[in-house]
Length: 154
Image (cartoon, rainbow, N blue to C red; front, side, top):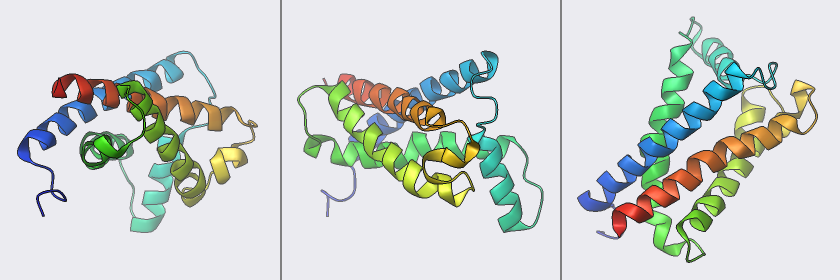
């Protein structure tokens, strides 16, 4: 059972690494907004719209961002902390890349269609650019996650 539930030591390391990954992801999203990159690709707004339809009430714009931030800082980082030793590669950044590519596939195949953007956000009408940017979003998060988690375990 102890192998299934992360120990307190692994949990706090995963949370710290997840917070760092979420912060770098947020910085990339701020840069996207500031540089006006892919202005019609707004995954947080699409999530907000979907949540509003599901709940039947208006959802504040900060809710999707908080949901993403907390998800990356807790749930995803706990899974990463649990799976870290089984992820292929001897380099922490490689483990992060593998995690990021898997997350990107799930996002592109499940999450984006669920919020109305289509497979890999192709329905946005910008070709593969949203898919490539979402890969960059996830790699920014996951490589930071892997590097910080590894540094905390040193």
